[in-house]
Length: 393
Ligand code: GLV
Image (cartoon, rainbow, N blue to C red; front, side):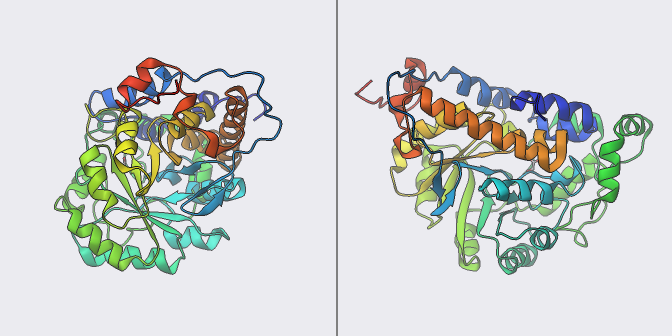
């Protein structure tokens, strides 16, 4: 891992090691992938102010998320099929996150179940919920997460139906993988991956096993989602979920000021400004473009998290500067997982924490609380953001 110096290195290594269908499932976005690209492009356009001759000898990336101490303002995002990037991937990523002192979020559509992960780690993790039409099943997932002592419930609100991902269809992505000739050749050239998945606890969706019928191809996966996920999910259901969940509730997938205002009144502990990593509404603005107006509208009413294109410590700085209290990142750690299992996730987290630390020093900042819009240099970012640029710049 020594020569791995950035998340892009991990991405390249993962692309070599993980079968194409699963790598591209995580990598890709919906339709023309305009929003997927905008998430990264808009982050890169935000320039940071280089400040000098500030004493930065004592600095810390530590902060809190929902009142819990963390080593940096980052949590691992929920990723469907995480355990298909590497066998038992959810357990490996959770262990790496916990060792690094940040939260891990287990997806409803994970391979290892809530109970598998709870039995394999010694600290609480977060659980991400998709709500099925069968409300009894949604309720049972919430109860299982509570029984496993999950410390937050992340309700994803932007996937009532699935945005089409062309690559998944073209790759014939299936869970478990089908051994058609093209897949077979691909998998045969990735023996370490094959071994890890063969040795893994499960080969299909652990949380919904038993509830799952006929998931032989990606078409049936999206048909299954279309048949099972509830497109009627509404703000009223957020109240219902909050009434069932005894802990902290996070609403993930808010990318609009009006929705953010409604979300802030639900009693949820936090929102995640997110467009589902460019995987749902193609043509939606990047999440970083929506962060400043949402932060301005909400003030300190609710904790704001940010998700959408985070690949570096500099990106963490950008999002915190524009109003997030912390961030989620999915692909950055999935690349680490595919590249090197638990050690790869650990490396991804070390890279981002070190980058954030150096970035703080070079912008003259010594604590996460000291990051504000004053670190933003570029006019472009300030104007596309709040419409309320800081007067001190
Ligand atoms: C599921 O959450 C996905 O984006 O594929």
